[in-house]
Length: 57
Image 1 (tube, rainbow, N blue to C red):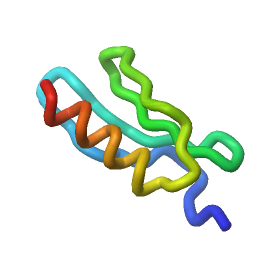
Image 2: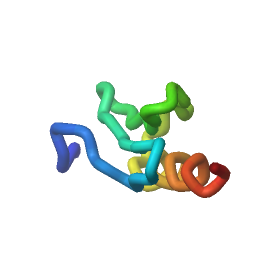
Image 3: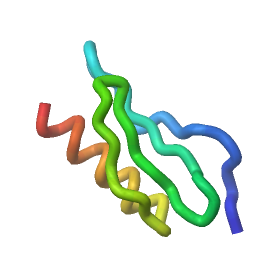
Image 4: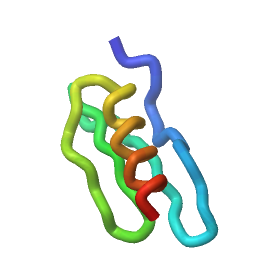
């Protein structure tokens, strides 16, 4: 079951803010720069996608 209803902040940098958002049964990572990760069933994987994006900057 979902334990969260709203967006979750993952990592903030000077120009980028990455977050995850639940969309039905899936969780999606996104960034303020316009990047969006794939829909994942596991929040942990969506958070890892967001962390990987932030680390690549």
